[in-house]
Image (cartoon, rainbow, N blue to C red; front, side, top):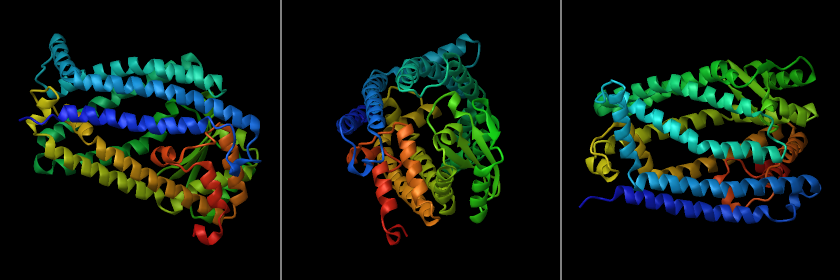
Length: 424
């Protein structure tokens, strides 16, 4: 008797949808609360709270609709055999184009082209509504329709340029990998991630944003002084024109070994008028570096990737698994897609665990900035960024524990106010 793998996968997807919808409802109820958490009273103005509440509720309503449509489409695609049908049609297209449909790489690329076309069509209405209705209604969207579609076209072009060689390499490795397939796949993805992390900020990110050196002055001097005091190998300090698309703010760092760079959003500089608040945010980010959080996260991702490929090698030759999803052949890409669906339960558990670790890292980075005597400035910066970004002030503990990679503001402020011995 054949095992109903597909039915089990669809059933679990629907089960997780109901579970996550329950959490969403809890969060929605928290967002509707008409009063600030006591910790934030006197720190957040009533006007900002009301704006934050309206923005969060708008996003919550939108999220309910988007998730319902997504689970409906995903379940239907699996249950009604759309994947095998589309795989067959993509093979017919290859033949129509005068190419060899027996060539798995060509067949796969045709399939992926159709999937990309379909995903763009189905995602576009939601992206447009989110950007030009919700974000615009609350004063965040700064991009024009032309800029939106220009970015979309650039993204598609990058996928067309980068996708085929990567997909071809993966198929070749799977076909020739033998008993060491998992190691070969992991090694390829490891090298690819290193190359992309190197090239993205240099070649890809500038296609979408303008990066300019932070001008000489007090802010630059303070950041450079802080970096030098921690032996952080800062080579370049940039400002990115995030304001051309959104008024949300951020800061991040990147680079390998002794070639580190820090990027500040221009919106962050506009919102934090006090240089010390911006430096406190950078102190937090440097805390992640000093405490090796980035390295630990990278190692964790590599281990999980290797384990995933190891699991894939165990099931890729299971004809019963492929037949359950409607396939009488065993294409490499389809095998990867099916495997990803079958390990959804583990993925949810891993995601939850990674969020727990990430929140722990955030507390540690805050404590690091506190040791550098940036407590008051970091508190002020966190409050200001919460206000300016209209982030949710009230959060449900179950929802935040499951979804948030960063602790809610209330928890971060409470941790900063704890005695030093608690943050060591």
